[in-house]
Length: 424
Image 1 (cartoon, rainbow, N blue to C red):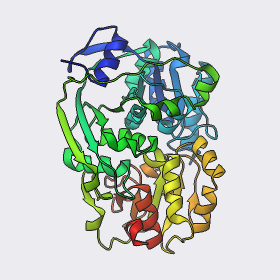
Image 2: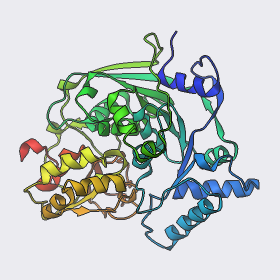
Image 3: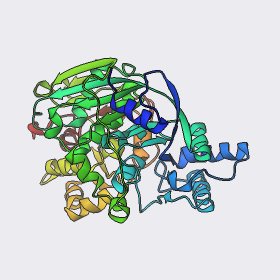
Image 4: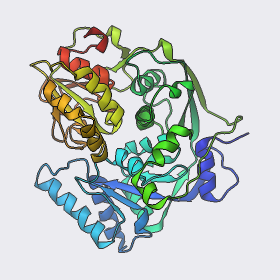
């Protein structure tokens, strides 16, 4: 039997001809990444072990993004610990506030991670980078500390799930809708510890932003990683990064064999899919927008690591242009990275958002985790383009979060209730 993409990448790193699902191997890590919260715990572990030297400071990436810009003294102290650690060990990829953004957008857009590589990260949505044909997965801070110290991790080779999407999407249907539709089918545990491979001609019609969104939410199905094949769109993104311009690093790409074995295979007819909404309190509690009636809202969040890509901001701006946010709604726009923010400014997007009555925020994870810059109060309702809507996820336990794509979120901000751009 042939090999899946994940199996080929793992075998290549382990120096083996092939691997099988369930096989445990040690693999060298190309990048071991952490944000300020997970990094602080990893640093604590290294200190506990008495280890004062990194295996390779060029393969460590540290990005403060969760409670930054620092929201209080505690956050400032945590970030300072990580900054001091990075300076002490001359970490190559310490990416500071103002020059980076949200880790999952920054790494592929800056070229820190490349196709065919293995990246482990101290955050569950590390799998986002699988959009560029690498194996990226989240791990606990102890494992990240181990990778910093030894340069490798052990992996249990995952089974793979193959999701194939066929056909051209309807207007205002994007990657967010495709992954939410699949989550309703798979549930939040349906692909536990699997590598989810995304296939189909629908990706000829969609952008790399949609691939990042779908790879990001593989973890919402329990996945170990989400991963795409390499094509011209991937190549164009990878070879436009600052690192590629400066270093022209080599990289390998991996394709699944025609006879690769999958534990799950799903087929979806995209023309049948309308915009999807994940209703509280789970990402798999999904309904088509046509079934969502008269849900008044208090806040809209557009952006973050799931839908903070430039194409997402363009889609939102197309809805907001010439319109006003409802007087009872707060609309917060969060670009995924500083690079995306600069590109948005070049296109005049922040002007459109501000004219419509939105806040154009710095790049931060803040409101997604109920951290800052958009925390929900008691009984408030939010439409968000983020990835999770568990009870209390974005603030008060009684608040509610509905997950949607950027066009739907923007339209909802204008209408003051959940609705489609087609209704405007």
